[in-house]
Image 1 (spheres, helix red, strand yellow):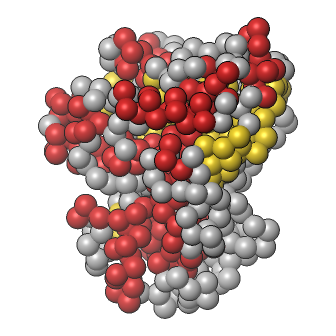
Image 2 (spheres, rainbow, N blue to C red):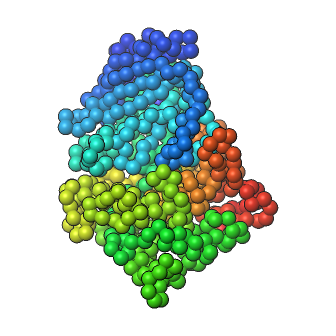
Image 3 (cartoon, rainbow, N blue to C red):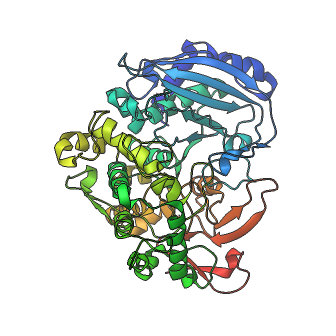
Length: 555
């Protein structure tokens, strides 16, 4: 951070008189109470109406709690927290018709000099508290706040409204830009001002962590605001956003009518994939370690009925639906950064059991009932998300007929949204030049988005900057057989700690392992696997099948 920026932050803090009671263990209550007030628009790097602190409170330390159920395994865990000052606020829009940006900043009284900003998920619209485990963290690991990090979250500039689709906000231009990228930058700048006020100095290092939509947000920060974060961890990022939404529409339409695949037949396909590909890595363990090779071994046509329909075969329309899912989507429009194709998904992890609303085909693609217009409860998440995005983002018509939608009829708008939402710019040279570090993780059993979209993005960075230079600041890892939210196999590791060591100690990632853990204390480790850099995958070499040491990263 340069001297001009620090001077501006100090001036902004002094203007409200909040710098007189710094947050420290012996003055926590007064230091927290002093953080009320406003933050001037000129302290935020993008146009806003300024920020207002709406509530502050000193929160006492509390132990970990674990719920019986949650939307993901990690979401059942409420991590332990230390004493901290919780700051809630809003950033006013420029357009009076646009929603405000809500934010939460958690300032521990014992600060380690760093901050972690959390990304969101789906279409956001919910305030991210910054109190959860980071994506893909081990369940027995302290959350960042308990480690002394300031943590930061936002709703990305809109709140979900009961009875409205989660995509409805996109009809407002400023709300759309905030969701695309601007809100995360604005909240980042506000958090730095608050740290300056609370502790009397700016943070030494700033980190960003996110999964899915939040993973896209992290990579977007590296692309658009390369000076703002020192390290970024991005899990299963939805980078090729326009392609994903159109693929969700295409794949859902393929399931309509006689193409729909009921839950029992999802399991039929799952068993057939495992029979063809599970043991190809040397061990039959319900995980397809090499899904790329599985594409050559598994032929969906072998399941097609030769006579009447039965529970042990797929009809021709059902086979066609699977082929559609597996095939790239060709888009007859030039998207941002020259992309014209979205990669197919699978095979592997088709029949993973649902954890809450997530897991395998049934959660993301097929649902428990066939896709309908309008969507009905039980439809797959990709249909709900993709169809809504087409109507509100691209057609800009909530009543657009999804069966007759043609991208060719909306080319200017598609290009406009692609330029905003698609985080596919391979030029990360500015981020690399200032010492930024990026870790990407793709779960290869993901049906919320195609893991191969993130893989193709990373390969585009390598083509742009060269493989050697890319390896100096960015790494791509994969987790075979693992779903979008981390179920199906070993999926967790200390990615934040690895990122901090790379940024601050220049220790490049090496020898990492993924763990599969029970989601309840004592979070017993059930098995581990080596964390392999793409395009390597774990091959069994003999020994304890539950131990990472029994595998080697191989091609």
